[in-house]
Every structure is written in C-alpha cells, then in structure tokens.
Image (tube, rainbow, N blue to C red; front, side, top):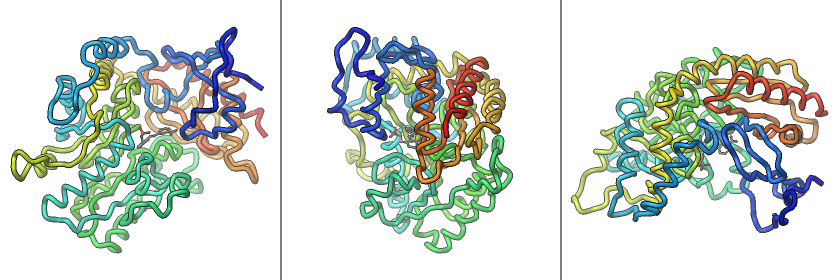
Amino acid sequence: MNDMSAPVGGNILNLEPYWLPYTANRAFKNDPRIIESAQGFYYRTRDGRTVLDSFSGLWSTGLGHCHPKIVKAVQDQVARLDYAAAFQVGHTGAFELAEKVTDFAPDGFDHVFFTNSGSEAVDTALKIALGWHRVRGDGTRIKLIGRERGYHGVNFGGMSVGGIPGNRKMFGNAMLPNVDHLPHTLDLEHNAFNRGQPGWGLHLADELERIVALHNAENIAAVIVEPVAGSAGVLVPPKGYLERLREICTRHGILLIFDEVITAFQRIGTPFGCQRFGVMPDIITTAKGITNGVIPMGAVLVSDAIYQSFMSGPEHAIEFFHGYTYSGHPVAAAAGLAALDSYVEEDIGSRVAELEPLFEDAIHALRDAPHVIDIRNFGLMGAIEMAPRPGAPGARGMEAHVKCFEQGLMVRHSMDTLAFSPFLTFTPELLEQTFGTVRKVLGTID
Ligand code: PXG
C-alpha cells in the first residue's frame, strides 16, 4: 500500500474521521493522495513528491497556487478585520469588491450579491428570479428550466435544475417541483472530436420552445445553463445555441441565468464567459476564480433594473429575505480584490488567447490514444472521454487519475472522462508534459 498517511519521518495521519466530499472514501483511504503544500503550478504531497496540477485546483486557482499578491492581501486583512457582521452593518472590502466585480463584468451588471460558494450563488440566483417575477406582480412564474448534464451545485435548487444523474439519484423525492430540463448538446455521432463550438446541435435550443409551449410562458420564471458545461465533461454549446436560448427567453419574458462558476474570470479568455459568446444573460452566478479559489466566495450579478425592482416597499423593510453569515466576508473580499487586480495587471486575457490554440492542439493530439472516443475543448477547458470498460463504467477514469498522480500529474476524472483546466498562465512546455503523461498512462490501462 502506498501509505501517504505517514510522512517521511513524521506522525501518522488518522484518515478515518474525515468524510471526503465527492470522493470514493474507501478507495481513497486505502490509497490516499494527500497534499501538503502548493506553489505556482505544483502540489507537494505528504510523502514529499511534486505533482503538476493540470486542473487549477478544481477549476478554481487559475492564477497559480499561493499567488503572492493574494496571500499577502489575505494575511494583511485577517490581522486587520477578521470578521464583521454581514447584516445591518457593512465593511469597506465588500463594497470595494462589489464595485470591482461590476467593473470587470459586462456593461449592465451593476449589482452583486455575495455568497460563499457556487452552490449558494445558484440557489440565490433562483430565488432572485422567483422574487423578481413576484415583486413585479408576475407571481405565476414559478417554473425553472435547467438542462440535462448541467451542474449547478449541490443545494436543493441547484440540484433540482441540474441534470447530473448521480446527484439526483439519492434525492429524487426531495427535488424541487416545477422544474423541467432542456436536452444536453453532446452527441458523439455528430460532434465527436470537435474543436471549439460544434456546428451541429443548434436545433436543440428550439426544445425550449417546446417546453414553453407545454408549460406556458406565464408559468416559467427562468432558464439556467452553464455557457460551457464543465462538470459534465466540457460540453461546448453549438454555434448559435446560446443566442437562440437568449432570443426565446426574451420573447417569452423568461429570465436567462448563466452559471459562470467555471467560465468567469478568464477561463475562456474573456472576463466573463458571456462576453466570449456575445450573449448577455439577465443574471450571472459565479465563484471559484473570484478569489482564485483561495478563500471560499461566490457571487450573483444582476442588472440595475432587477435590483431596482426589489427596492420598493417601506424603506426600513428588508427587500430580499436572504443572506449568509459570511456574505462578503472580509478575508474573502480581500482575496477577491487582489485576484481581480491580478487578472488585469498580468494581462491574463492575452495570455489565455495565446495559450488556447496550443492547448487545443496538445489535447487533440491524443485522438489516437487508447480508449479515447472524444476530445472537446473551449477556452482553457478541455476533456478527453474514454470508452467505459465493459461492465465497469468509471473504472478507467479512476485508474487514469491514480496512475497520472503516481506519474506526478494531477488530473480530474469524472466517470471515464478526464477534464483539464490548465492554469491561465501555463506554459507550452507544461502543456506538452501534461498530455505526454496522459498519453503514457492511457497506454498502460486495459
Ligand atoms: N455551478 C457550476 C457551473 C459549477 O461548476 C457549482 C455551481 C457549485 O459550486 P460549489 O462552489 O458549491 O462547489 C459548480 C462547481 C469538476 C468540479 O470536477 C466542478 C465543480 C466543483 C468541483 C469539481 O468538474 N463545480
């Protein structure tokens, strides 16, 4: 057994009490992979090995681990103001960050509600959508439309509009009512090995018309999609698809929510993903890159029109009964301010534009590697899908992950799909190293 619970010459780590999230706990505890520290593009393990991170944390740490400016901002902030009550008083950092996020966001997104995660951002956005229709006297609009294979976190709202079967299986009878789903857009018969946006699949946006006809527009509050679906294994929207969703939502008075937990903060080359596609939603959710993943934080962005609709009733009354103890937390706000400055100062948009074609070539070079049935990419998001081993779906993905780690490379697997989220400041050499290791490992898997 590879006993990483014992560092070289150190004490044994008790692995039992910790129930790991989204992890096969028993398999992990039999063969733990424990990270002790990180710097730049690398993790350092408890047994002293260096591991190249091909996933920027979990799509989160695009500027690199232990980014000096962010580390310093967090250290200074925690010593100055560790926490301030989030309700009925404010603190400077939350206001400053809200202004900086709205400056960073496309025109028209003028207000920010802070949360502590993507899941909370999604549930907050769904509540804003329901509340907005209600305060405007449109209270019959209660239905929410998500998409198959969509991932919107693990809270009840996000899970219900999400379309990941594994998330829904155990909780079927606790799902929100009044939810429907669009079909997803991946069909390997038509769009396998596509580079960038597929030319096939636009007609799938028209399914929204069918859903609207079924439920009646007057009952539908919002449609929520990820501009590029991340967790499901990088499903890239067909050309014209997001534009068509926008057009249908506008025509029927339905709010369009883009869940940009992954696609914001330069992951696909523009500050927010919607700018890359030139399609503006009504509400944006985000998290992860807002603080470079350093301190948990999520956010919901809305237009002035949406915000102002809530600003009615007696002035002493709370307009939106919602909030978290840690909304706009001072330390998270400090991390966010430093991260947003860094995206600009380091000209990350240009670096992503330079890296994207190199990443595309490097990942598609694995087209002829064993088991590979599809490769997809957009911006600095990419996925390699393997055929499942007969009778054991997910086993190849797990084996690839473990073997890559042993070879000094952290890759993310979800079932038999390997996902890649390289650092926004990665180098061509490290892209070669990443995919060279993956190719080698795939050659060793049955
Ligand atoms: N929406 C989207 C689009 C996400 O990608 C969430 C909501 C939930 O965020 P929190 O912060 O509550 O986890 C996410 C999170 C993966 C992976 O491997 C993806 C996520 C998280 C962890 C792993 O693809 N996405």
